[in-house]
Length: 163
Image 1: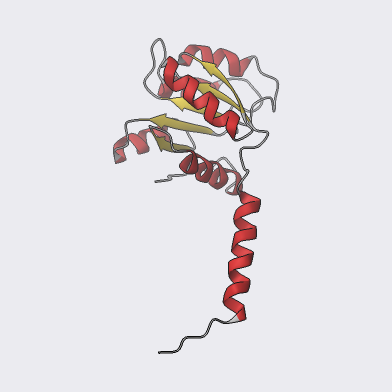
Image 2: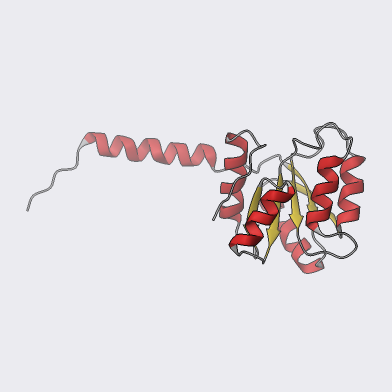
């Protein structure tokens, strides 16, 4: 059987490769406020984001992240990466407190849950609490990038479920 490769197909492959290349650096220059109580996980997350050209400030519990957010200048952080299980104030409580705060971006800043709890009810609880998306731990950078891209292109205020 003889099969021919058309010019159209190769053109679409090139345009797809160009598209992937343009979208590939979504994290470059972003600043994250991150809630992570596990020191090793915090170091790994910091390094992974740094490799992608992003910065993050780590807070060890929900109370710390709430304070850091409330004291930040509008636009200082692009997004919040929120561990759910933390001491003092968990991620759900911290998210509710951030959404209720008087900060100018309290209702707009995207918050992404990061947790090993990946059952459907966990995802729904994250979204119901006011988070925009849910990513399972251990965090895979491709999944995080896809989630961030989805939030950015979707306006950032509507909940997103990325699997």
